[in-house]
Amino acid sequence: MIAQTNKKIRSGKLQQALRKNMSNAEQALWNVLRGRQVSGLKFRRQHPLGDYILDFVCLEYKLVIEVDGGQHVQQAGYDENRTRELQVAGFCVLRFWNNEVLNEIESVKEKI
Image (cartoon, rainbow, N blue to C red):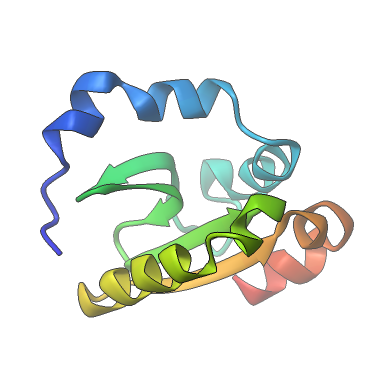
């Protein structure tokens, strides 16, 4: 996996559209992650990396956080491949379901 962002992603400004239209779970988690509220870590949201747009990432510690909704049940293979590629590139990937974030935000924060 190349760390340089795919030009197609950058030119389409997809990450900007995703920031404006975050799910309720993504918004709830962003409210916890923003402003270095978790262990002083700086997170970016909807950050392009290679061929992907990561929900949240702390580049300093190579920590990726993905928030998955119901559609991810049907794309489990894609998600597994994506996680594997990120891990090969040196990233640690944490995945949480929407309902986990919305109903157990303190537990999610503790795991991070």
